[in-house]
Image (cartoon, rainbow, N blue to C red):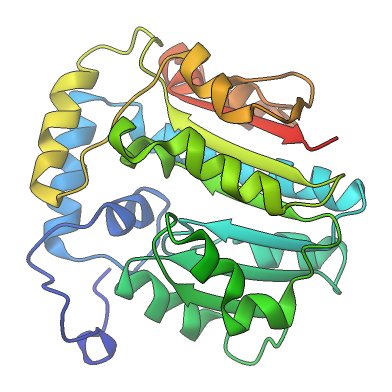
Length: 270
């Protein structure tokens, strides 16, 4: 599906593939271009289960979000939200509790523009263009201060974003800065491509991403678990994305590689 080009920010070149739009394509969304679909096809040819894994990640978002709402959370910060396609965070939580408030954060102007269109008319949802490293800028933004109260428990989502953060950026340190601002009883949900999931040709697929200027950095189970320092892990802990509280026959693949490719977990700040 081709996106109307008149709304695209002028600094965006549709001929250059973009990881958020590739993910949107795998989810069946319509905000992607031919270059994105071509890259998605290359990666899918090398790793046939990758699109299925992307869908499992979106399903994990839904299950984790519902869990948080049922645990009393009514405000959410989605960092690295990408293009909000079907099954978005605000749609999910507001279906359970209409009073829920959500702020989306992404550094991609296309994602921000798309998400701004999507939430038009919903005064309980905001969108910020920012890099996840700008903790003070994100938490001090007008949208954040208007919609979120960090003196109260909050749900923070970082799904499939930390594997685009190299170790030189100190991702654990970045997470610690967010954790320090979160009230007791808050939750962190994250997912990250697994380096030790025995996924064939993972390194070959990662090399293709070099053309997007967003190289992934897969991490082992222990490395991802360290991101939850200062949080109590919610059962079943850090597991393959599809294995975090599956709620239906279509939640788990017959392909174990698709089940295990992204690690996923939820932690609660005591």
